[in-house]
Amino acid sequence: MSVIYALIPVAIIFVIIAIAVFFWAVRSDQFEDIERQGLNILMDDDKPNSTDNKTPQDQADKEQESDNDAKR
Image 1 (cartoon, rainbow, N blue to C red):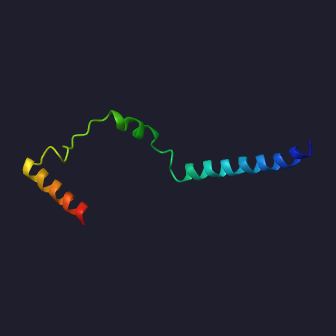
Image 2: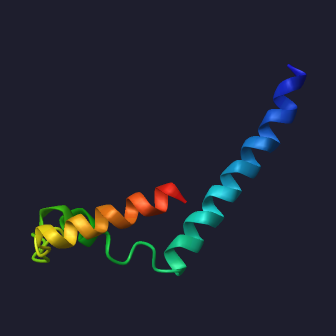
Image 3: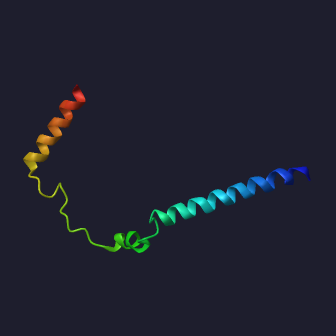
C-alpha cells in the first residue's frame, strides 16, 4: 500500500509532462497541416529516375569508379 504513495506523484508528473509537450506542439504549429503528409503517398512523382537518363557507358564508368574505390 505504501507504493501507491510513490506512484501517484510519479503519475501526476508524467501527466504534467505530457500536457506540456502537447501545448508545446500546438504552439510550434506541429498540427497545422496534418492531412498533407498523409496524402503525399497518393501523389505521383513526376521526377525521372536518375538511372533512366544514363547511357550504358555512363553506368559502366560509374561501376568502374566504384571498383577503383573498393580497391583503395
